[in-house]
Image (cartoon, rainbow, N blue to C red):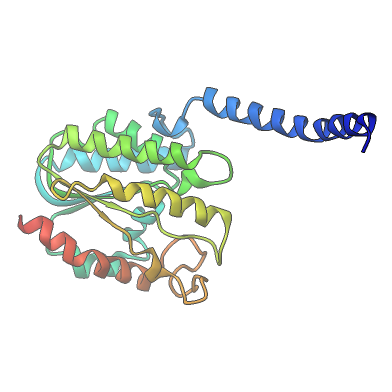
Length: 250
């Protein structure tokens, strides 16, 4: 190849590669410049969510002092009052437990609830946290942003409830079968496991129990491949049983 041919090839290659590199650099810069919405406390604007949030805040206000367990999360946690109500009664009916689940909530909404009194006056022995799946939708938040959102919640619980043991749950798998969103959740869960300190913060991930051997999720466990059925809540309760007994007996 003569000098002219080599020069022409180099110019052609640069014309192909440079736009891609520029696009990647721009995307990276945009991500770095964008504030992380997952850690900025925010209220829910829609009336239905606001009504449920008001119920949760009033529930906290009406139950000051000691209790056994508070459950903090989104619609999957709220579902203990619906599809999971019989399982709740079976496993937690004999204890004083409070459900602080709000359908559609993301990490930033839980942080807003904390700022507006949800934990004020409470003295639970344990707090069960399962949050983050709604942050994983599309490009709303990156894996790192979701992680920071959950970390911020755990930090707030520890500061506001210093005597409460925290059980952080791995975000449940979702979708009928393998997907990029599932991969996103798995990466977040791997990092969430590092929150456990063996003393005040513990971690439990039983997502593998919610899927079949081929990676699919059965409708008998998650009818819409996101929210649990009654049998799904039974699996959840049994998976936590040993760890919650340990935390409550300490």
